[in-house]
Amino acid sequence: MPFELEIDEFERLTDLIYRKAGIRFEQKKIYYIAKRLEKRMAAVDSETVMDYIRHLKFSDRDGREMQELINTLTINETYFFRDFNQLQAFAEESLDTVISRKTARGDRRLRIWSSGCSSGEEPYTLGIILQEMIDDIRGWDVEIIATDIDEVILAKARKGIYMNRSVKDVPGEYLEKYFTRSSASYHVKQKIKNMVRFDSLNLNDRAVLRKYRGFDFIFCRNVLIYFDDISRRRVMDHYYMALNQGGYIFLGSAESPARINPAFKIRKTANHMVYYK
Ligand SMILES: C[S@@+](CC[C@H](N)C(=O)[O-])C[C@H]1O[C@@H](n2cnc3c(N)ncnc32)[C@H](O)[C@@H]1O
Image (tube, rainbow, N blue to C red; front, side, top):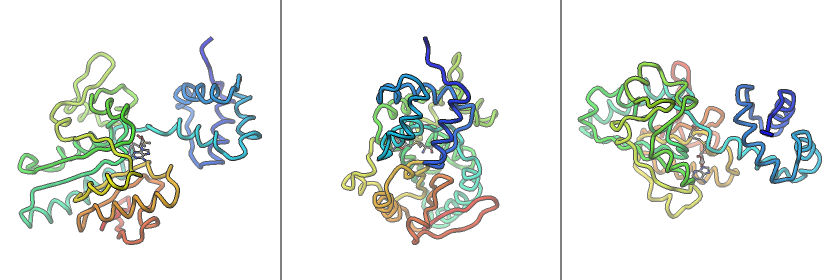
């Protein structure tokens, strides 16, 4: 019989996750969660969801299973135009500042790093935004470097083919302009794909990390939340060094760059905080 997660089980489980990790899953995620939960239940030999919840509550003393569950549920989660307000701050404020500064200097190179890019929705979103916001984009040498530790997810990212769930927040006009539709899937157009280079990179590999520098923007959203304090600080120190003077960093909405590395400066935009060097 196919595995099913009942609403009350879903609520008990997600309540427990919320209390332990502060991550809230909405009810519309029930199928997504059920699919992944099944694997964790098998890993700890729980036959029913209630058994698994009891395991988390009473047998998981070191919290390892809770961490495994959270990793399984969040690890590659991403979608186009995630955190719209933040992207708006990027598109309408920070990008303009950097473009004007560079134009004045006769520097026509723009480098963006999507660090922890998962299946590619974030870097392609950035490509779309750049196409929309930079009038004379053909006159610019633009490079979006997208990195992730997960080779399997990178292979998916390079294909640039997505289902409904990934594109649900793409404004209709952009969906028409930057995707081709093929039955149930959406294919990112070549023009956007050409803007992005995907590389495999483990952010904890310090030797390789050192090669990544000279960026005007770094996006590392919803990645460092799973790092411990020491590695988080180390990666943020690297980002500071890897940013050009006046460059911007964007972390996930629950993460504050200045709290991790006080060297970052803060500016308030219309409805967001932006952090820069
Ligand atoms: C939740 S996704 C975030 C995707 C995208 N940035 C977003 O916000 O929508 C987190 C990604 O970080 C990657 N990741 C986790 N640990 C990493 C590490 N040590 N080095 C590089 N990437 C890592 C995961 O493989 C995953 O694809």
